[in-house]
Structure formats: structure tokens, C-alpha cells
Length: 337
Image (cartoon, rainbow, N blue to C red):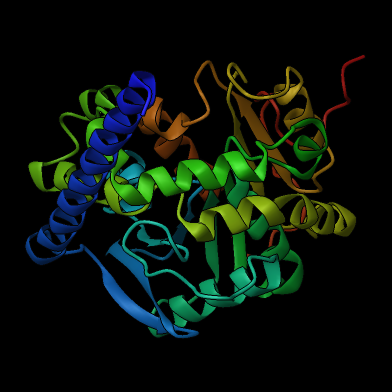
């Protein structure tokens, strides 16, 4: 056997052993984390799998947080914002199939009717009643907008965190399926154990996230990175965006958009597309922010204050924009240019 072949076989064998060792360690750590890091909420059974629903606080308004695509641990991800709202509001985080500490849904479509049915059922089983203020991030605004059309009596308002409105998906190109599947396989083998945590997020929220929260953040990352359900969502997202786009803007429901600067997004027109959509809303407001896509990490205090004042300005039953007092992006201003 040629020497070069022997070298490649030896290297390949060592690599396989290392991968097997990493995967074995990953499985052991997953079991340890499941036994030693209790989930903060409750698991309710929906369509044969457990959905993790976390709730805290009390108040007349119930805010339902819906995570954007691929967010491994929604409950911890949203904590910088929801922790500032629990004194005056009831907050609920629903983690979709394959996200956070929810189980994975086998063979279930990730179209909007299915996902919305699961979210509504999870809230019902968890004892959370509407009408709700929906707080979606990024892709989750599609579910929120669809919800407002299908069950408008259940939606008190929508407060969207840098929402990926339908038009954005016409401009964005998604990664090829094979690349996503390859990365998903790496994650299932435990590659995340070799990668550093997002120290920027943890350091930004050092006074908000306890040691338990940081352990939850780490456990969710290793458990729910690029899961099959997340990949199925991505493969369905353009169809979902098209379905929401065909419905048009939500029917008179108060809406507030927090719009990031768009740096790092796949389209240079990110801000313009969100502003254009916001200006079509019958009862809408928006605010452009000097922040990245995860605006609730960078400006949670401001968002909490603005969200609260927004809800106070649009009492239940209001179907026309309130007096905006000249605030940026309130109501339906003319589109520049």
C-alpha cells in the first residue's frame, strides 16, 4: 500500500475516533443538562410533542414572545426585554418545535396554519388566555401577521422586533439545503461544544442573566442548534411569506415596529422595506434604531418603555391611529421619494 494512502487512512481513522468521542461526550452532557438544569417553564403536549411555555408576571396585558428563525433558547434570548415588563404585564414565551426546550415535531408541516395551531394550543393548555399582544422577532412576524388575519379577536396588538416582513424574502437568498443539512449534522454531533458562547450577549446582560440563566443559555445552544424543525421552517419560509403577503396588512390592529439598521442582513434595502411596509398599516407606528438585528439585546430598556407607552396609547377597541404628537414613524406618513 502506498505511503500516502496509509497517511490518509491514518488521518481519517483518527478523525473518526475524535468525532465519535465528541459525539459520545455531547450525548452524556445533554443527559446531564437534562437532569441537572431544570427548565424554567412547563411542557404541554401538542400534536404528540412537548412545547415549552414559560410565563411570568401579571397585568392586564399578556405579551406573547415568538422567536426568530434559529434562535436556540428563546426564553433566555428574550429575557433582557421581558424581565423589564413583568411588573406590569403578563409575559409568555412559546418555544416552537425544535426550539429551546421544546421537543421536536416529527413529520409535521412547518406551514403557518400548522405552527399557529400549535402555538394557540400550547397557550390554551398552559392556561394563558387572550387577547394577546404578540411580540415576534424577525421571521416570527409572519406567524403574528397571519394570526391577526385568522383570529383578529385574539390579537390585541403586535409589537415586532426588527420583523422580516414578506417583502424581505423576495430580496433574500437562503443558504442551499445541503449546506444547512451539513451544519445541522455537525450540530447533532456536538460541534457546538467546541465553539465559544456568544460572550457579547452574556456580557451585555450581565446584570440581567443569573448563573442559572447562563446555564440555560448554554444548554439550549447545545440542544437546539439548527434542528430539523428549524431547517423545515427555512424551507417553508418563502411560501409562508407569500401567503402572508397575499393577505395584506393586518386589519386595523395596532402595530409597532422596531427597525434595526440592517447591517449584516442579506439585503441592503432592509430598513426601506420594513419602513415601507409599516407605512401601509392602518394603525401602525415604527421606530428606526441604531442597533443590530437582535434589537432586544441592545436596547431592551428603551423598547420596554416604548412598548408600554404604545399599549397605553391604544386602548382596546381602537381601530384608528392615535394622536402621535409628531413622533417618528407614527400612523401613515407619506413615503419619502
